[in-house]
Image (tube, rainbow, N blue to C red):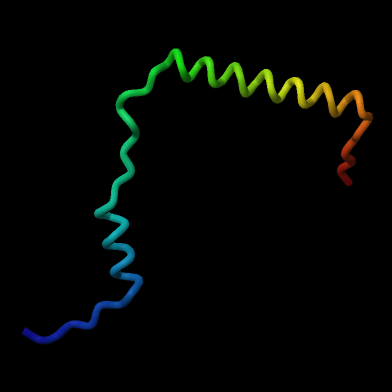
Length: 60
C-alpha cells in the first residue's frame, strides 16, 4: 500500500456527504400558522407606518 495524499477540498466534500440536513419531524401546524399571522400583521403595521411617514424608496 502506498501512502495517498488527501487534499483539503476532498475532506470537505466527504464531510458534506456524511452530514445530511434532516427536517424536524414534529412541527405543530397550529403554532406555525399563529407565527405566520404575527409576522404578516407586524409587516403590515410596519408598511402602514412607513406610508404615513411618506418615506419612499426610488429604484433607478
